[in-house]
Image (cartoon, rainbow, N blue to C red):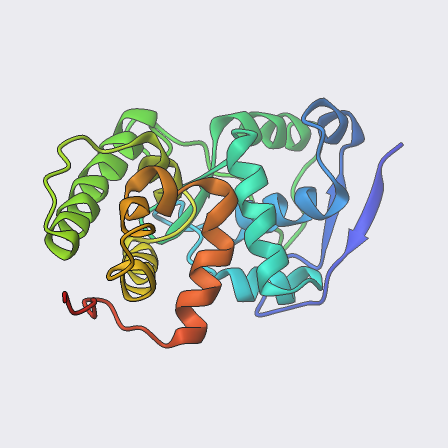
Length: 224
C-alpha cells in the first residue's frame, strides 16, 4: 500500500512525498530517509541536476534537526541512493530509476516537478564524482601535511568517504580543531592522521566540536 508523507509547502517545492513501500523496503529505508531522498530529488530538478539545499534546510523541510539530517544523508550515501558533488547533493541512478519507473505510470499534473532523464555526462556519472573526491582529497591531504609537517602521500579511503558527506572546508575545520587539541600532546599527536580524523563514526562529533570551538580554516597549533 502506498501512502503520502505530507510536507510544508516551501517556495514551490513539492507539498508531499508518495512513498513506494516496495522501494523503501528494498533499500531498508526509514520514512525519514525516504522523505529526504525524495526532497533532494525534487530540489535538484534544475539544469545542473544538483540539490544545493543545506542540511539545515533539508532538516527543517521534513521536520528534523540539522544534526539528524546529516546522519540521514550519511545513511543514504552508504546505501548508494545519493552522493555528494562538492558541497551539494544529487541522487544516484539507483534512486532515479525507481523514481522514473514510478512516474511512467502517471501523467504529471500541472505545476508538478517532472523527472529529467540524464545523459552519460551528467553529475551522476561515477567517474566524474570519483575524480572530484580524489582532487579534493589531495587538497585536504596537502593541508593536513602542511599543518602537521608530515609527508603523507596517499589519500585514505576515510578521506574520500568523508568528502561524500562534508565539504573540504568543514573537514579542514576538523584538522584545525584536533591540531589545537592534540598538537602538543605526545600521546595524542600520532592520531593526527586521516584514519582517525575522518573515520565515519567520528565525523559528526569532531565537526560539532570544531564549530563550537570557533576555529577558522587555517588556524593551527603552535609547536613547542
